[in-house]
Amino acid sequence: MDTEVKDSSHLTLDALDLRQPMRVVAVQVPDAQPQWQLWLEEIGFVPGEPVTVLARGVPGGDPLVVRIGASTFALRRAEAACVLVQDCA
Image (tube, rainbow, N blue to C red; front, side):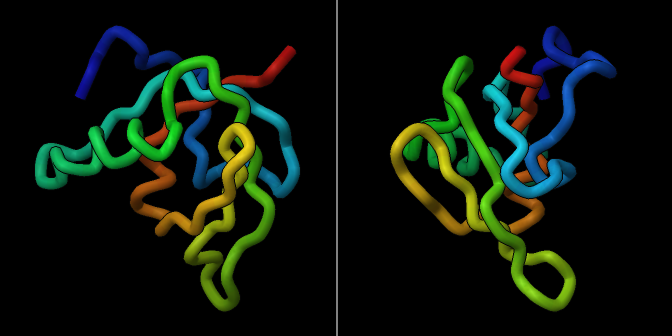
């Protein structure tokens, strides 16, 4: 994981309330899933991109329906937990 962006002011995508507009700060994947880094970046999870959680699966809140830029994807909570975000303000 990249230690430069670790900051208590950053949340992870899986922890957001629905329809809370945020921006991507970084993607930090677990050591056991290095392939997630490129995959998440390829679908648009890059720093500065606007992101919003639109819905959560029932039960358990998994998967999440996420809008990134102009695209919408379903992410597992474990994948969403790799995306660090901050408020758009």
